[in-house]
Each structure stands twice: as structure tokens, then as C-alpha cells.
View 1 (spheres, one colour):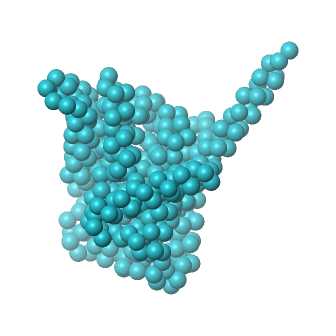
View 2 (cartoon, helix red, strand yellow):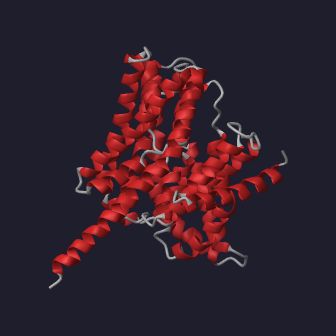
View 3 (cartoon, rainbow, N blue to C red):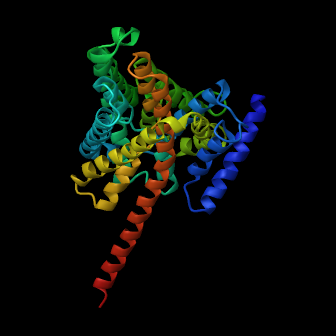
Amino acid sequence: MNYLLQLVIILLLTKLGAHLSNRLNFPSVIGELLVGVIAGPAVLHILTPDTFTHYFSEIGVIVLMFIAGLEGNLSLLMKYWKPALTVATLGVIFPTMSAALLCVYVFDFAWSTALFLGLILSATSVSITVQVLKEMGRMNTREGAIILGAAVADDIMCVILLGICVSLFGSGAAAQQQSAWGMAWPKILFFILMLALGKWFVPRFISFFNKLNASENETTAAMILCFGFAAIAVLLGMSDVLGAYFAGLAISETKFKESLALKVEPIGYAIFIPVFFVSIGLNITFKGMQNDIIFIILLIIIAVLGKQVGGAIGAKFFGLTWDESNVVGAGMVSRGEMALVVANVALTANLIDKNHYTAMIVVTVITTLIAPLILKLFIQRTVKHGEKQSTTEINDQAP
């Protein structure tokens, strides 16, 4: 199909899908994800994953996370670093070990394969979580800050554990080229660079561009920083969305924050971000799934409950209510690019076969579809209980 026609179909269907989803009181992102499932290889075969959707969706998720950083609050993130680290740690341990134990004792996998399958479920992708938090006005709450901080932390943990597992269990080129320290030091360098560039380079760069005699100087400067930070992240072995998020976060500390948010959001939400959400649904196919259906269902349950329970318990340790803790847990459920990276490394290192690789992709995508529904449910409960509490307090104070 011509790529222009493909783009027209995606933009048209995603807006209709988002409209219907909102009318049914679901997050709009659910409608956009389902467009990919229904119009893609799983059902109607109207759309298929190709080079065009791949690169457009890559830009979409990068811009989405850049916007999340731009609307972020650095002081709030720093304030909640301890609960974020705790949530991340428990959110890695619970699903990884649960999945590994299931694979070993129920499906007779070797421990090396089982640990890799568990590790695929350990990484959080907050791209879709961010969209739901934005829609429901919960980005700059302590739950939102903990979720974003924990997502950064568990990405790092996942990468370190990946390096250890490959060096211990892997075979072939992937295992020979990787070591725990070899994978860890570029990540350390990444965070040092992000902090240094964010503090000293970003505000000066935008100020310099602002003085140029050209149109949309600030917006261009922001996009250069967005994609530049994303490129640095990839070069140092981190997720590109993490670099984009830090670029947005750095700009959020400057005087350009408000004006740039108004200009960058239309760029993302009009074209690129809808393609990203559709591309997730396009990765689903039901062919051959019947052979692994029990395996897939059990792993989906573990993927959801592992993050939900681990994240909620971690947040509860730091004084959040159970409603707020469940929001944090639900915000950690979504999987994405890091899970796909781990699955690909496991396949390359001959630790899983192609059938189980496909099964893990299906688990990742379906978990990502479920995550926004769970998150919205818990946010609504938090708001509802908060309103009840406010009403009770008012009544108690009445003469």
C-alpha cells in the first residue's frame, strides 16, 4: 500500500477509535491500539507493519516521551526517588521470579531460559501510561512522579540483569561480546551526560537558537534536543525514549517550557503519536497461538499481577494510600520497547526459540493493551474515594 494512503487510513481510524473509546468511557489510547489489532494482520489485513510504520512509530514514541518530560516536574521526581527505586526493585523481582518459577516447575524449561523469559516481563514502558496520566490530569501527582522515576530505574536494572544473564548463560556472538561491566559503564556515562547537558547546555542552546533570524527557532531547537538526546541514549545502550524524556525534563526547568509545550504537542499528536499506538496493535497475530495458549495466558496474568502487586507494595511502604499505591502498580504494568529488546537478545543468544519469542511478543502486546484499562480504573477509584473523604471532612466541620 502507498505510504501516504496508509498514513491517511491510520490518522482517520485512530481519531474515530479514540472518539468511540471516549464515548464508552475508556482511555482514548485503547481505541487507537485496537485500530492496529483490527485493521492489522490479526483481523482485517488492511494495514501491515512495514518500514514506514516502524520509523513513524519510533518518532511517535520519542516525541510522546519528550512531551512527558516537558510537562514533568524535576523537583517532584527528586522528592520521590526513594519510593521510585523501591517500586522499581519490587516491580522487577515479582514478575521475573514468578515467571521463571512457572516456566521451570510447570513447563519444564531450563533455568537459563526461564530467567530470560522472566526478565522480558521485568521492564516497564511508560509511553502509554503517560498518555492515560495526561488525559486524567495525574502527571504532576506523587503517583505520577513515582511511576516515571520507577520506570527509569527498572530500565537500568533490566539492562544490568540482561548483561549478567547473557554473560552467564548465553552462547554465540551476543554472549561473547557482552559482560556485566561492559553493559553497565555506558549506562552510568549516559546519566552523567544527561545531568550535565540538561543543567548547562540545554538552556544556553535554546537561548542561542532564539536569537537567530529564522522562523520557529525555539521549536526547532527543542526537536534537535529531543532527537539528539535520544540518539545519545541509543549510542550508550539505553532506550531512545529515555533520552527524549530527559531532554524534555531539562527544558521543563527553563523559561521556554510553556511556549514549547503548546508548539510540540500538536506536532506529536496530529501525526506521529497515533502511528505509534497503531503499530503496537499491528504486531499482534493469532496464527499458531492455540499451541501456546495456556502458556501465554499464565504469563499475561503474571505480567499484570507481578507489576501491579510489586509496585503497589513498594508505594505503600512510603505512606501512600492503597488507592494511590494501586495507581502506581497499574502504571508499571505496560510493557514495550525494552521487553522487545530483551526478547531479541535472548533469541540471538540462543536462550529461547522462535516459537517462544513470538509468544513473548504476544504477551507484551496484550499486557500493553490491558494496562490502560487497569490504570484508569484505579485512578477513578482514587478520585472517587478522595471526593468521599473531602465530603466527610466538610460534614464533620459543619456546625
